[in-house]
Amino acid sequence: MQRKPFLAVLILFAILSLVVGCDNTTPSGCGGNTGGDTGGDTGGNTGGGSTGAFSGASCTSTGNVTVSETIKVTSGVYDGKCQTFNPTSALGDGSQDESQKPVFRVENGATLKNVIIGNNGADGIHLYNGATLDNITWKNVGEDACTVKSSGTYTIRNIEGYNGEDKFFQINAASTIRVTNAVIHNAAKALRQNGDTTFKIDVVFDQCELQDLKEGVFRSDSRSSVAKLTNSRLRNAGDICIGNWASCTYSGTTNY
Ligand code: ADA
Ligand code: CA
Ligand code: CA
Image (cartoon, rainbow, N blue to C red; front, side, top):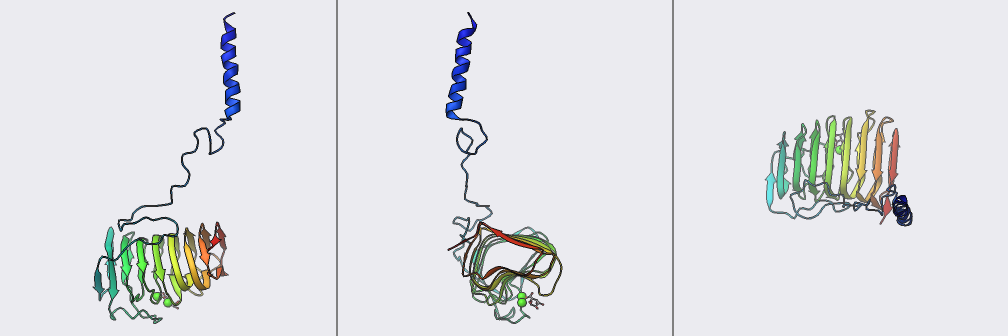
């Protein structure tokens, strides 16, 4: 008979595949696993060093720049080349005085990257009509670190900031805010929607390290706003959700 050897080979294959168990429905085994975690580096950093969860910014200062007038970034990419930007008293003194000016103003989808703001934080960075921040250090947060001044989508990654008195992010307009790999130590709130406002903000903090927050992470008075904290680590960070929210959730957070 011609068919018998063919049938034997067929049965052998069937038995082999049963033993090895290649069903391609699981991520591991049978060549289906393509490596898993690749570290979460979203790129865009020319400041040197690695990025990824909890690494914050990566600049080592390459020099000092005195700033006596707000630097406006209105299009394209402004690369600070890891210089330290030091405001004069013309911008403010970094206290809790509300009349201070920002060191940078970034708007209309422009990007600011590779910047260190020095020991006078003044009113930090103001954002208008959408913007991206990448690889920014606030050595000593002033009145606040970063303010959303008008509606838009804001992408903020690979940042770190220290020693604020009150807010780190201040949100003064309806907006979408995506923060990845932020290291924030010493503030009252990591993010505050402007008090008594009811517009909607949509916030996600992912892969952030939050430490020593007197009040907590997210604070809003708006019942339409949503916030999410994911894959982050906390130490002495207060409450994650304060005030009114449509939704405020967290997942994958650990204490360290
Ligand atoms: C405070 C103040 C607001 C606004 C905000 C800011 O919350 O009440 O009016 O100035 O600070 O943007 O720093
Ligand atoms: Ca303020
Ligand atoms: Ca302010």
